[in-house]
Length: 132
Image (cartoon, rainbow, N blue to C red):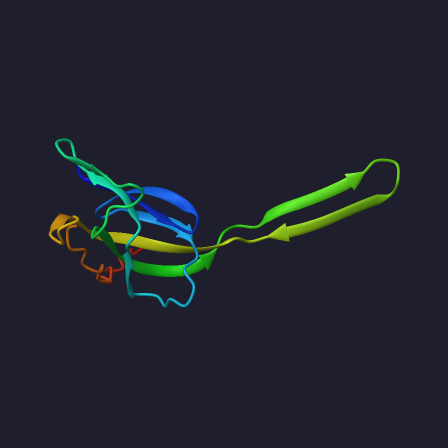
């Protein structure tokens, strides 16, 4: 199985074709758009590994942005004992959910490609009526 190591949002991610993952929110991006990550640190499979110094020139990873959203609330609660002093705060980190489509090698050829995903069709389930 082929993979790539990309850098975005100050973090590094090991990604595979067809994988869905949460990354730091990408600014100025809308849902269902195509995104390219040019900062590929390494890519390879079981036979070949290409490592950059620090990045592999010409290699890129193509992905689709599924949605931008916020994580669950993280509560911050600070209390000083015997002083009737407490403070409660919350934080919701923003993220972007992406699906990796293609990994391109340094010469521009497709190194790995995800299978096509068809959108699930809404089937109307026949309601079973029970006679009494």
